[in-house]
Length: 302
Image 1: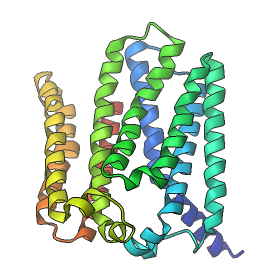
Image 2: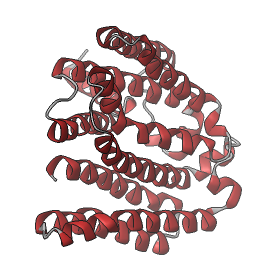
Image 3: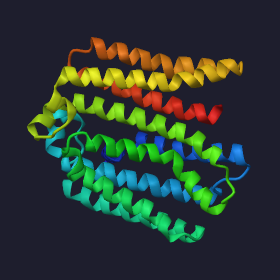
């Protein structure tokens, strides 16, 4: 195999497992654990954290692979130039990669549960694997349920280090958990909005595949209105943080919140109004991913 072909295969595989999303997942877990460390002076040990990150991103990668497997026909309509399966990677290989990632993801979670001394913790990985499998094949065909499933899984990510740390150190304050819940809510909101935005992008293929997404069932205009008001709710959610840091006279936190979180959210609302075609919403999807990243970094810095 030529060097160019090897790079193409590697690039295609990175697209298949959504390497940038895996980076965000790892960052959420890292930031959450560091936040606990800053507040409590102890948190999930580094070797345990690495196992948790490795296990979580493996399960997520398996979820992305199996999702592309089931969505292949629809993806050929929605984004024919971006389809990886049956071009650089054989479709049957996707099943094997899903099994590989899911098995090592569960094995990592199982090992971690043994080290911590609570076998019940391995249910987190098992339920996540099953949910992602059912989402790809069944749940995403059910009106709204698929969007909520992914948003809930994303919302739970910031709480994972706290859950494991709590089993190790029972005296960790519930106040720390309450603070992480705000990051969890942020992850839930932004993911839910982005899922709906992606559904708007994919409306053509979803119609052909008889998917019961909000844009297919309620139409393009109704979906735009829902995204607009969800973005408004996101801004309302962010405002108390801005007010808090203004009162505390933390100029840097206030400025960061305004420039990197609130302003992009307001700009996104404006774009929702002016966009007339489904494919334009890809820009909004990118902006929302950046808002997610900036929101995670906010917790790391402040």
